[in-house]
Amino acid sequence: MGALPKRKISKARRDRRRTHDNIKTLNLFACADADGMHIPHALRRAVSTKQGRKMLGLDE
Image (cartoon, rainbow, N blue to C red; front, side, top):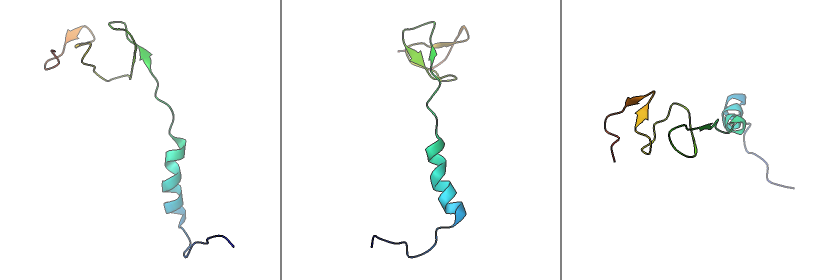
């Protein structure tokens, strides 16, 4: 016979493990200021502005 578990795995432990099976792919959006796609609500160093305002500390 194959390997058998020594103890029953509780429903909570089993379900916590299975939460990662439901992770979806990221929704990427096209960036108007630069080429390529980006994650929403995330700043990139290539584009140092957000909603038309310059962000501090992102200068190259």
